[in-house]
Image 1 (spheres, helix red, strand yellow):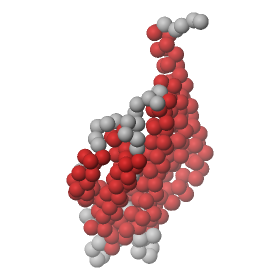
Image 2: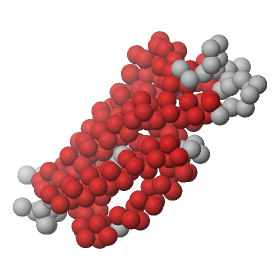
Image 3: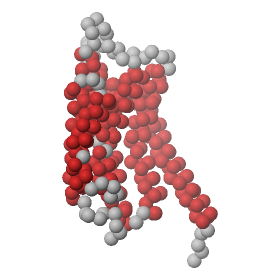
Image 4: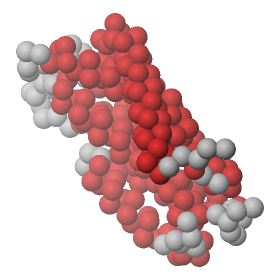
Length: 245
């Protein structure tokens, strides 16, 4: 049986990496092309939480000549990326998994699936729960005689920031479990750190949400509850999960 030299082995891995990257990008581009005819509708759906809170006759504006075209296109591209994310992560997994032990695959596969699912849940929580409250507060706090007409590009930047903040916040259970699996922290240490996590959650809520108590609590409380979920999962883990079976 012929064995590959280190150089040939490296070239083989690089060729496979290139193939996986091409497949991942092609999946993203194909989804973008399929969604592009619906770009305006996708942006309207994204803007719905704000439009629902504007006064009668209120509307959004575009302050640049090219904004009405490029902003919906950007939203469509980001939507295509999110929809293609499972396919792209599968390509990454297919490249990495042959080098993993069986016990590592058993542990990392559910963590990867959970991380993707929780990120989408965090985005959905932001869209359906947080946005109506935040935009209701912001529109309602406008001084008398001030017409709220948000630029569509600034609105996109704002909601992307909230999507990322809540998507990452919902990754807390995965981060806690991963730290425990790596042996970097123990359950007693995680339990002892609960008070610091609660304070940190409210600090993050104050940073990433508008300056009202309700919005801050809508990020801080889920962060705390998700941390508790991570602790619950760690209690179920075997004592030495990373050792080969």
